[in-house]
Length: 486
Image (tube, rainbow, N blue to C red):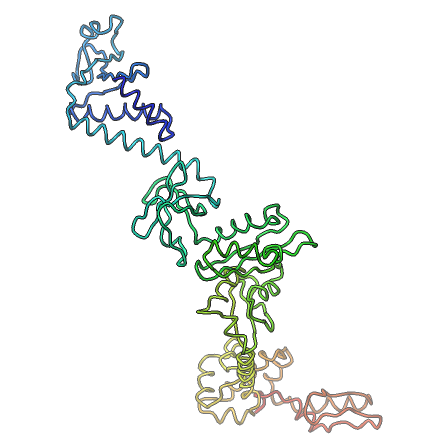
C-alpha cells in the first residue's frame, strides 16, 4: 500500500497536480470498483492514510431497533460489538475486505484515476494559460498529426491547426517557432491550448517586439487586418508629435519591418497611419491606390463610397478584391468603390429619373382614391407634372373621369405642391364664382397704383409708374388652378 502513496507523490510532481487531488481520485476509484464488485445498494466509504498509503473500505449503516432495512440498517446488539458507544440513530462503519476486488474492478479503478488526472491537468492548464490569450510564446514542434502540429510549451502541449498556419510555411519536428495563444478551452473536443500563426494578433505582437516605440507606448497599434500568407494591413498612431509612427515601424533602411517579413516567410505588410476622420483613414487604408474623393453614405451604418480614377480602380480593389477587403476590415466600414465614369453615369441616371417626373401613384398619399389613379394610368397619364398641365376638359376626356373626379384630382395635386388651403377648397366648392373673384382683384390693385405679379409665371411683368396692369381677363386666366376649373 505504501507504493500507492509513493506513486501519488511522483505523479503529482510530474503533472504539477496537488497530491490531495490525486488522493481523492484514488478514493473515488476505490468506491467505483467496490460498487461494481459487490453490486449492492449499501452506502460505502473509503479512507486513505497518507502516512502508510493504506486504503480502507467501509460499509455505512444506521443503528436501528427494530431493523426494517438490513441493507442500510444494523441492530443495536451488532453495532455495540463494533462500537461499544453505539446508540440507536447513530451511523456505524463496518470494515469490508478489499481482497475480494477482482481484476475487472482494478481496471475500472485505473480508468477512473486516469480520468481524474486528466481533469486535474486541464484545470491546471486552464488556470495558467486562460489569462495569457494573445501572448506571444516560443515553442518547439513536437510531432505532426495529419495537417496539424503539436507543439511543446514547456509545461504542456498545444495544438497548431492547419487553418492557423500560413500557406507559405512548413515546419519540421524539433524546429523552434513563435506563436500567439489564441484560445484556451477547459472541456470539449478542443480542450487545451490552441496557438496560431495566422491570427492578426501574431503580427501585432511581432511589431511590439521589434519596435521599441510600440513597446513603450509612444506609438500605438489601432488595428490590424490580415489574410495569412498574402497581405497584412496594420494601422498605427503616434502619441508624440515628433515621432513618425510609420517611420518608426519601418525602421532605418526597413530593418524592423524586414525582420517581421522574414518571420512571416515573405508576407506583404502595409503600415498605415491611423486617423480619427473616416475619410482620411479610408484614403490611407486603400493605399497604394490614389483616391479622388470619399463620401459618407450612412455614418450610423458605417457605409462609405470611394471614387477613384479609372486607372486606379484595379489597384484600389486589389487581387481578387484583397486590398479593399482588408481596408474595410481594418476600418470597420462598408466600402463601395466606383470610378469617375461610373459615378457620372449614376448621376445622369438620377437626373433623368427626376426629369421623367413624379409617379402619379404618389397622389394616393394626398387623398386621391386608387380607382381614380387607375383611370389616369389607363388614359396614359403617369406623372403628377402631366396631370398639373392638363385642363379640366382634357381630364374629362379620359374614360371614367367625370367632373367630381376632376375636383378630387385638383385637390390632390394642390396638396402635393403644398399650395392647398381653405380658399382653394372654397374655390373648388363654388367654381362658378371663381372668374368674378379673380377679375375683381386687379381692379382694386389698379386703384392703389402699385402691385406686382409672380416673376416666375410666364407672361408676367411689373406694374410701372403709369399704373398699367393685366386686364381682368388675364388675371382670371392666371388664377386658374390646373385641374380645378371646368
